[in-house]
Image (spheres, rainbow, N blue to C red):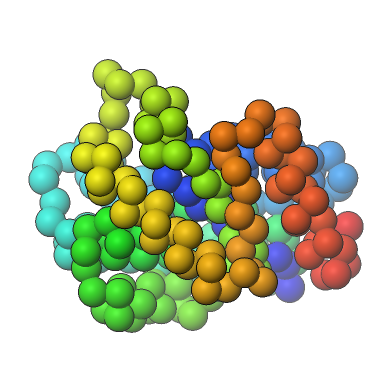
Length: 207
């Protein structure tokens, strides 16, 4: 069985950059790695991503269910087969994004979100969640103001609720979450990510 690692964080936190950096480092060591992002990785996921980020107005509940459908397809088509083959799976966002954004951000019932997440993930949980925590204003300032999607255009208070949600999730499971200051230089963040991931991979015999 492989290892499942996810990257989480608010807008502009550097998730995608650090996920790619980890993939390169692992591949340089001969590891077999699959890197995907949510929503994406499948035809359905890509369609959902275009719709919820750039399409027409979508309410919180349809948004929740669309993300759930995309996630279920990704787990079935990509995540489970790769882990079964002993690969390291890295996802840029997973179910915790839904809890943070649609739960804490949008205000949907956390119990209902837990049910949707469980169905969508088929009960799968990451072995490690890397949370890149950045100040909301700082994170948004990294995004191109002329090309912001629906989430990036939300009010600051929405993003503060999302950040608070992530921090609560991390505090509830400190043994599974690796919280890193995303405002640090990229190289330093990459080193902290590696320092957290390396022991897990060694314990599974993957390094």
